[in-house]
Image (cartoon, rainbow, N blue to C red):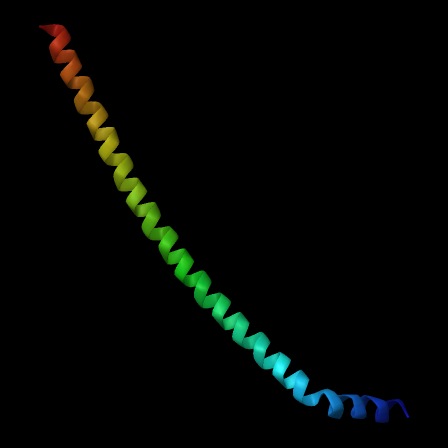
Length: 73
């Protein structure tokens, strides 16, 4: 009796279950692709910020040297 109920439920909901599973895999795949794009963007942004930091540090050092030269005169 119970097995018949299970089979009947599967047969009645089969197309919806298949659709749900397909949708689940599709959304999972799209989420993975979105996450990969986001991580790529974060890595590029991090590299750019590191280069900016190096430039600012270099500029600070140059300004410090110029101040020392001006004060020494």
